[in-house]
Length: 577
Image 1 (cartoon, helix red, strand yellow):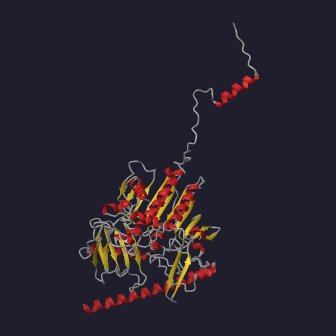
Image 2: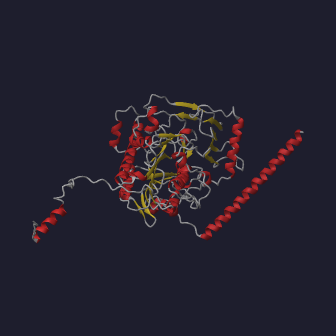
Image 3: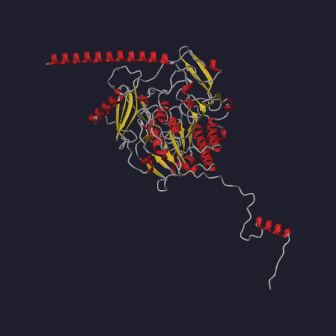
């Protein structure tokens, strides 16, 4: 018997609704209510990595946990320690002895002797900046397809708008043009000698290439917080398919020693001097800011394809209670405490076998330019001037031998009495070749190894003769520079002095113009910023002709001096014979 079932149209509609809603589908599960959705993860592992370069200012070698804890430092940096110990710590990593030289080298991949910035830090009223014909790291990254942001301290000049970050390759900039200032008010005082006067003006800016604005809204806000929040906001709102480069250049822990009171409470019961507690709180605040930025990377789904590089620009300063222990010296000196920096590279892109390792290869701040451009971004260095840096990506990632065998820390010829084409030990210079390191020129009489004050170690001091001009150390055997062996190894000294001569022969004349007494920020709204205009093409040609004529006269004078010296020596030999 065949049964025939006739369903009304109403029944069919009801049946379809039930099927659609899934009520009669026994295998379906209801969606959980009020469950927080995970951040959308970008599937960009095959793309160019995002790069976050973090630069601390005047950070002591022992003032981060991953270096200083074993020496008794009680400064706490849990986020930096976590990143370093799950990345690659660079134990043989060097920078320059001052802010501007290190920052110019990072931006160009070239030693300061090749960019004219070998003498000292750029001072606000000196009309100078990173030469405009130098190709910069962000410019090459933009060629490779990156979006580029800078946050923090620039300190590479501001005399013209063309000197500013957004004219040197960055799409946007928030921060300070100068090298220091008040952390809360962002005011910077400068004392001028001739005529004697004190200039005080505001230094906080928010720039794009099309629009430069003064960051008045940041007045009263602690700079470390502002920089971190800006970096977080860049990451949080980032929607471009292009890879991201952020150069985050903290002001901390450079003097003046200032920090919100709540960070000092953490160190209230620690046996530190007052200044040391403030320094510790500043570094801890910076560490917390870095931790927040890493969290934002994870929330945005960008962390798995991001490379984080951390570095200090030079050693800890004598002006603050910083410690470069166990190394000798401070910022401004060529001893290890002035030029060996805390540094690491962290990325989930590293294989597990590489995470938590220490790289002992010789690496210099100039190496980041080719490493980032060639090794990380897949770009090229075409169009740059000759680089002093090496691509270290394989050295770090594959643990191959470092291609670097020497580092020129600097040659400073400004103010040296012995002028001419010959290198002289009175020139302040330093060079490392393999195991050996030579330092020349006056380095001060009192030399110090400053331990963390809260540690069980005691400071060590040594007084050097005022007229001492040459030191030689075997850095491999004597990394703390206890033993000057220059008198025991005259042959090695001569080899290294000859190498310094070769560098001197190819050195660019240091740029160190007189202070511009006419410049007063009061005439520009009480704000530090550009005050000159780029010269016209005709003016530039005339200036170049004048410069060439001066150089020709100098060459002629040097040639005549050499001729006279040879004649003098010839006569002396004839008289002796």
